[in-house]
Length: 155
Image (cartoon, rainbow, N blue to C red; front, side, top):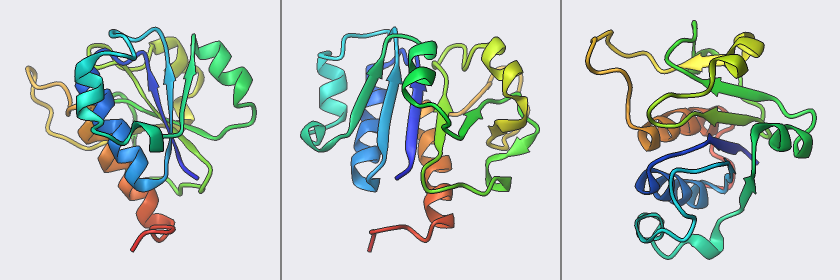
């Protein structure tokens, strides 16, 4: 089962959309706090529709706790600063794909320690348009991993 990890997400609608995508793809959603919203936020709940009871959601107070609870995990770190494209990776069916907060991404100290596992989505280099929307980015990378695994359990 694939795993999506959100490091300190800030926008509840994005997290709700990602939760919905995780449910429909049988993917575990890991959230590393603190978040920029309450997990009871109405915009979060609305974006996730009535799928919340179907979601395998795991929450961690910080990155260190996440690592402790998921020892040995193969983690890919999505960042605009990576050299490797997300489509260059061969995804294992139990890997973790981490995305950072909307305004700052994954902290540099985490990226620096894991530069060989950093991936990016190719995009134009436009000064004022820095990146794609978080929920779109998750969907792009997650569906590539699912494609490589021949869409397990999906019709």
